[in-house]
Length: 277
Image 1: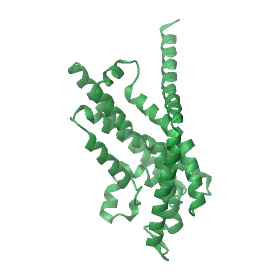
Image 2: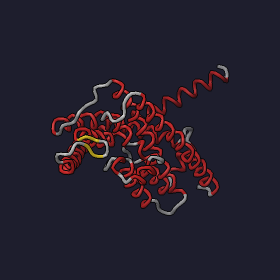
Image 3: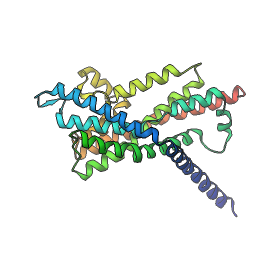
Image 4: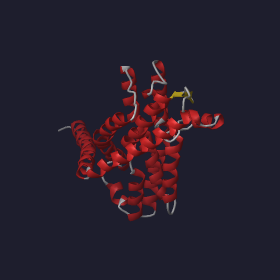
């Protein structure tokens, strides 16, 4: 066998290993699926609280921040259920690996540690999409006046953007987790990151309802690409060519966040090897 064939075979084996990480995490989550049935209930309660809150705010009014009452209901429902897909604890997993020293073993194995974590997060995301987001959205539609998109382009755009929501949120988690290499304890940083993402991504309050100056600032940050932009496409506030424009914003932030993530990964490896960890 030539060296070229050997390299190709090695790449196929490595790719198969990364896919296995997705499958193994999915099966692991499946073993504890009862926990997610209660999660569906909790998320439904969150949607209910937000629905009745916004209903009281709207009263007999027509629109608020560019959202009609029906659009706001749909936005709240899909935003919380989308969170069920893109949410993960990669930051905490990485931080734990660093604290207990097991990351030293991970770094010398013949795969990319960060990519493995992303694959594990994707396996968890696929599980959450199938057994959490879809049934949860079905329940929300039964309980609240959620309006689904009728345009196939909106569905296609939303599903693609949902995947990028996962990627961007996971990148932020990886960056936060790797920061444990450079601080004694990043617990506070992880909690702050979670609050910032939930608030500034538009999950709790749509970005269009923030004060003008703050809304302008948030449009320059990656958080809107996690919840607000996909939710705007789902509710029909962004249509036609605008769908691909906001998808371009997500792709832009995905590429930008690769820079600090890759840099931190290499800096962490260098720090570990220099210190003899």
